[in-house]
Image (cartoon, helix red, strand yellow):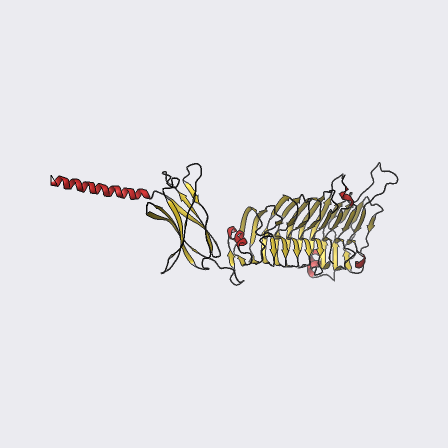
Amino acid sequence: MKRLIALCSTLCLGLLIVLTSCGKKNNLPNIEGSLDIKIFKTDLSVIAKFTDSEDHDLYNDNVKAYITVSSTGEEAKEISRKDVTITKPTTMETSLSGNKLDFSNLTSDTLYSVKLIISSKGTQKTLATREVTTLSTGESEDDPILVDSLDMLLGMNKTKDAYYKLTTDIDCGGSISSIFNSSSTFAGTFDGNGHKIYNLKFDSNQYTGLFGYMVGATVKNLTIEAPEYSASRGNTYLGALAGYAKHCIISNITIISPKFTHSGQTTTYGYIGGLIGQAENSTIENCAVLDLNLNVSEARLKMYVGGFVGENKNSKITDCYVTGNVESKISYTSNSDGCLYLGGFSGVNDSSSGIINCYSKVNVKVTEPESVSNEGRKTFRLCVGGFNGGNIHYASRFDNCASIGDLDITVMHAWFAYIGGFSGYTDNQNISLYDNCVYVPAEKGIVAKFAKLADNAAEDEKIEQKAYISMTVGFVGAKNTNTLHTIAYREMLEITNEHENITRTLYRISQDLTAFNQTIRDIILKP
């Protein structure tokens, strides 16, 4: 009997051990996990991913999960621990993700161990372990933050004044928003290091471009390939590199095949350029915009459009060029502030620092609706040139610059039009300087179509339109009659509906290019 009792006790103890073991095993069901970690300077962003078993323990909250960050080495210790909140779909999926957890203010250039751990009823299991190294803080050009992914590129808005260096080409994957804006401006240094950023389709923002809004920034050695933009909105600053740049240094930037379509400018201003929308008090050198396709439809109020820069405001631009096509369609409104300044290189050049040793190889086209009924046409001002539209508030300076291409201009309704092979307009208030500038017609030169009286017009009805046109500068302000040294390489001017209010501003034809630098001579003589 005693033996039987002992045997039963032994069997019961064994069964209890087995059951206990099974219970412990069931506490940690068959769940697999991984870690998605993004590093920005001394910060980590971590997302846990799970593959649950058929028991769906993560749904039933039978299992908890957390992430730890620990130092490494002989004195390794846990630095931070955060619980994971698991996103649960409405249907029972086996693949789940946790919320993004941020671990900030770690030590730069340091190796850390990151672990994903699950626990249930006092038992825990490590599902994944990764070792990552934090980056430099980018406090000097010799120790920059290395940008090697799209996430790193977009993450630049976390630190606007650091030093960055691109280490690889980056595919933006299509739709992208500007990295910076007027409330978070870029003020750091970005060295493209000879790499390119490509496949960009910009969202519609007030300040649109890769860097959006820059103040005091330096950007260099970068190629942006095939950027696209198509939007209808008001108050726009648009350029492939940035919509707005102030007190910036920009050098060795190449924009390849930008395709911009903009419409709907109904209020305030629009600054649109292939590189920069508006450049203020900046230095830009050795930059190029290649194979530009820029179309601005419904140009209504205060539009400044240039193949390279929309408005140059007190900036110095040297050794830059643009090739491609710029086209705009005027859409008159009843507002009295309507104007379009459009040029193959710059819409407006309000800068005595000037544009130097630059050229545009751009065809320019301006059209308008066939019929217009509102009063806006009576005050609308069109200033268009092969290189520059005109100046507004400050004197312009151009030195050793060339405009190469054709101008096709239809302006039958606007009462004020200024058209020039090189520049459309110089004002009466400032002394502008044009030294060694030339317009070179391509195939057709300047083709312009102006207003005409209707067939049923009264005998005493007159054309109200006033227009100035020239192979060089359309309208020359009184203070500039002796300061604009511009030539046309050959005569190619065709006017349709030449009425009595059209003034052909004097110009000089010459093929003497000895005063120009070698680059300008080569682009003209070896097209």
